[in-house]
Length: 154
Image 1 (spheres, rainbow, N blue to C red):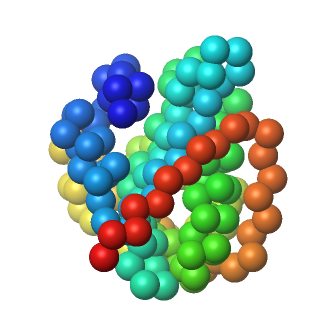
Image 2: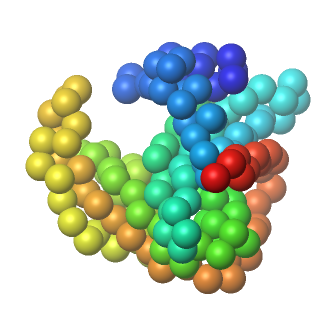
């Protein structure tokens, strides 16, 4: 967990240690960690959770030097694969309207906007776009090492 907290602290809108801990401890949560070459340091992570046939992607975070290298794509692809294997048929997420890089990523993965939450984000103030994707049988295809962990508590 310390490496995830350190990653988050280096981000402009990073999560607190408490927020990271809550996601790791979330019942029915799914966390994926991407490791870089060489020393095997954490270069990104994502987290979400599932409720029956639906999942919500809560976070994808990648360290600055590794952005635009396919890490977020690998994490999202693996998240979708894990969800498919767990019987999930629909994934929801929220993204800041101003976050064009994330919006392009989600568009490449065929997510569709299904709603908007005005002034959802506070620093800076921005609307959240609610996006959704129906999933099924997505092949895992990445050369970035991703470790995963399922919290199966009821």
